[in-house]
Image 1 (cartoon, rainbow, N blue to C red):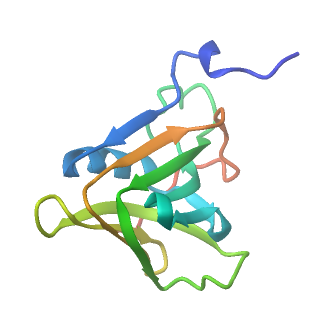
Image 2: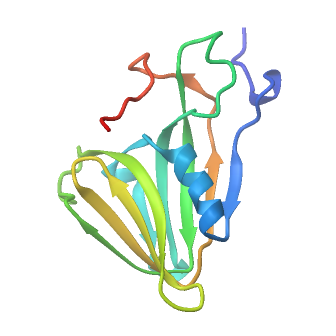
Length: 155
């Protein structure tokens, strides 16, 4: 017996790009409730690239009635990054697991600005960028969410 492949199902892995605020909003909605260890967050200054390996909840899953809720590992990457800062995150805690709530863009001038990744527990990551250049790409096949439930939010 072999493992299922993406091609075996009706749904394909996500591979999306964002070049403006509307595109980034789509990526934000698909990455909402993603979890990731702090060790899976990297900034390659010379390449001006910030990337996360996230375990994202599959909000777009059309087969939820046929199986348990699913997650998939995805790379969330941002290019043209000039600097990265954070608050409310203990970067020395290598066992820390973070939860992504939203991604939004704060424009300054001529397309440049800040991308703000808001995390659960009052944490945030702020990327100073020349322009919005983001990608979200699934890199594994989906797997049953360990919690076996859909994430919920307090209003």
